[in-house]
Amino acid sequence: MKYMLCWSIPPQNYNAALDAFLEGGAPMPEGLTALGRWHAPGSTRGWLLCEADNVVALAHHVAEWSPLLKIDVTPVTDDSEAGEAAARVRGQ
Image: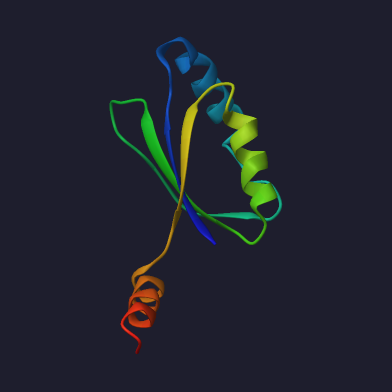
């Protein structure tokens, strides 16, 4: 399953979050694959699209960064998956 993580850095955590990212690069735990990561220039927001067969790997990554970041997690589908679901609703 694919998940979109949207994060923001509270002002009081900015330096610590920046240091943690620069030191480690935010690697994915085993079982979680990063498909893309984006940062909004000049802001404290960013997004990570990742994939996991086991939600525990996702929970591990979120728990690792939760002391520093506010993270919202949303399961997402691509167009082909959404189209398949829509076709089922239409009875096709």
